[in-house]
Image 1 (cartoon, rainbow, N blue to C red):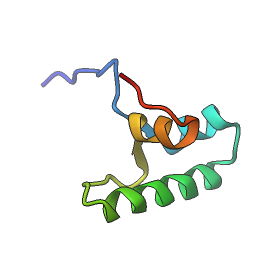
Image 2 (cartoon, rainbow, N blue to C red):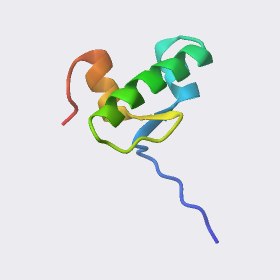
Image 3 (tube, rainbow, N blue to C red):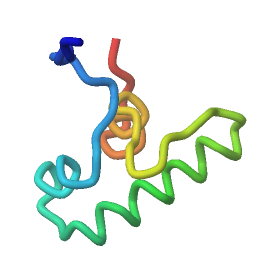
Image 4 (tube, helix red, strand yellow):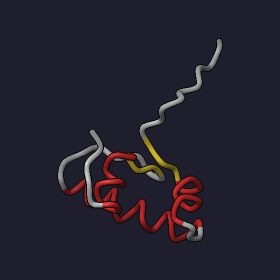
Length: 66
């Protein structure tokens, strides 16, 4: 069975977030937990250790991607 690689991933993982923000891996996990908690409180399904790119950009940069 062949695996397909998704070029346009929907989520950031902790190492990607760490590189993007220039913070430690532990800090990136903390950010992901905080944002996933917010999403969960709003009724969304979350994935541990990953954060949707669109939600992160909205919270961090203050705008929505179209």
